[in-house]
Image (cartoon, rainbow, N blue to C red; front, side, top):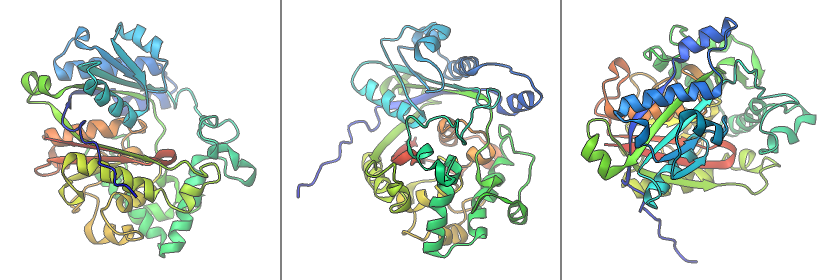
Length: 393
């Protein structure tokens, strides 16, 4: 058996110099009142303008464009009036990967990552017979005759098995939602900032898909996010005060028997997470003990348990004990989703997590600022794609 040498050549060659987003709280209020402030492209354009302002750049400085999958690439480029020399379309984490690789290859120096979503006002369905995404992810619809008609139902089944294997209780699961609501209470951008949540409150709510309750589910809201990623040398020279370096990337997929739910129910995506972790930590030259804040893609609260184990923060089956003994909320030893995450801040499909990573490293977030924050790790395991980004000074 040969040993593969991990490629760390993408480490430290790119930095985030600008971030921007729409007013998720106001967007949410207006949409709930029956208004439609923007469509998905409009939200994205507004976020892009704010990211440019944050970076102190002009539109003509952009020579690369990556558009989120919720908008059409050509139309988005037309709206922004950008004719890049390199472009693409991807979800949040893959967009960062693509930008770094484009810069590494010399195809671009300043890449705009732009995302907009009008999912609430457009009444996008994430469950039921008309659920979006079924053509791409057969497991979302393949098991619907047996009642698994939503992503929530799939994660409920996944966590129910995990819960029984490791002897967890509903109170263990509830710690995630409660902790993230604590962080949201300190975040002016969080939709649920003024909605306190105790463990008793959490347990008093009925199941949606047992063992998941309403507060285990992500929000559904409209909004936009944008990031500007620049070649690191140029960023250090011209934008040193705001530049946040991308130190490590890692990815590993589990596709075998995906439609049959094997990676979810047998492995909990653990092998893929370990593979992504090995790559990201090697590239950045750090490990879990060096990470000051962990940001986890959290369409549902069980993601946190799987991430803690898969990315080396605790042993397999030990996430509940780790959370109880160390804490992941305000005042905890490992701050997790310090913005409130998808559960309590805003459901921007992983894009808002990238902004939080940048802001934590930059500092100045008041009561929710992680002290001396040098390294922030982002992780996701959506549909068996385990991926990680390590941001830092």
